[in-house]
Length: 241
Image (cartoon, rainbow, N blue to C red; front, side):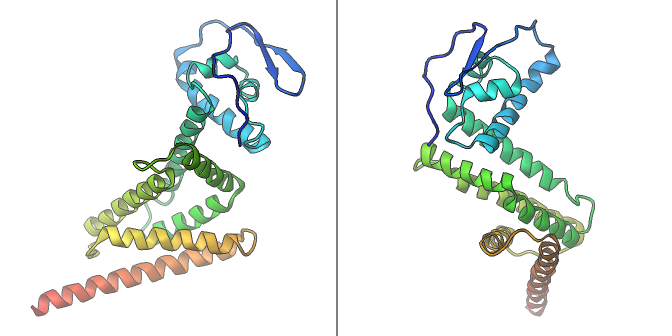
């Protein structure tokens, strides 16, 4: 589990001490930050937290380390995040959105099958990377600490992925004339097949880029050939009636 710090907010005085290291460093006083700096600060703190988490692990994750990594005072972190649970929940949301935007940006102007092919390969690479593995641990931790009958982080991530896949499929309907009887079901098949492959290859061998790209192409072509064939059969049945 993550080590706990005192719940009270620290003094705004100019010292930070790293627990267990004897490292004592003055916190530099600065003037009022510019508007641009102030707007970037939350992301800067979260990025520093992610780097600390990757380097130190959950057990040694502390606000002292984040403050030194970001070169800010610890009180600055507490002003935005009351404690580690709130920080880690915000960090998960931030990294999920960052990852989602990077995947969506891939192949946006390409034809449908090529777009899905490239994104599938990127998803496999991302989920099997050290950052992807760390993200999985963070999701598990947040679900263990915060989830309840009304909310589950992993389920929320899954549902978010479905929404974006459905949007892409609706785009295919309008731009490429593909008939999709149930875009929601098609999105589920796509996402669950992709995640199943990640789980399978992750348990067998290290990441292989060439093999991943071959699989992504085969998977995408097979998926859309089946989807288009299903659509053709529906059109034929409608015409016969």
